Image 1 (cartoon, one colour):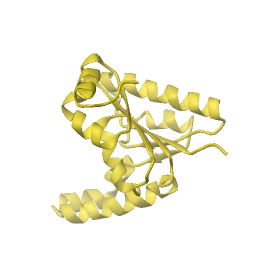
Image 2: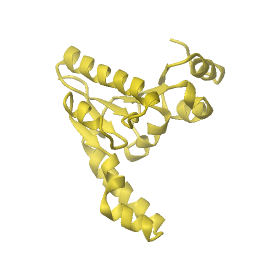
Image 3: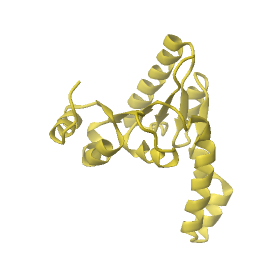
Image 4: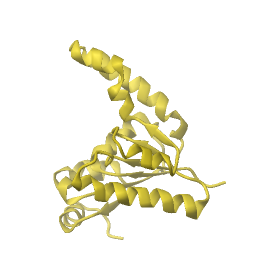
Length: 168
């Protein structure tokens, strides 16, 4: 059987900057599905109109729906932030349970790195992290989360190399 892979994409928010990354992640999911014969699981960190595009290619876990759920909104409106965070955390752990044992993750941006907090720590897990030029100010966060990096611009590549990421 194929090794489980999870692809997570932040870029489901439809704006010009995110379309390129989302299109690339969609292509990666299609290629992985074709090359391996088994689609990866896709976690969409934010809801958006492009979630359905991923769902046509692979199983999707819609983590963004947790933030949009009525209990989360009511708790936030009542300024019960700690309770809202606890509720969301429990829901996210439950949602992500089917992928807790994955060996390989592809994170679609630095802002998706917090997803790792809801997965059990796992020795040897490969975490490939996409870092764009618009994320250079968060390279340290990327280095803390990832084991491999896709720099989608010269500034991102230079920042990663300057902080010790190994070129490949």
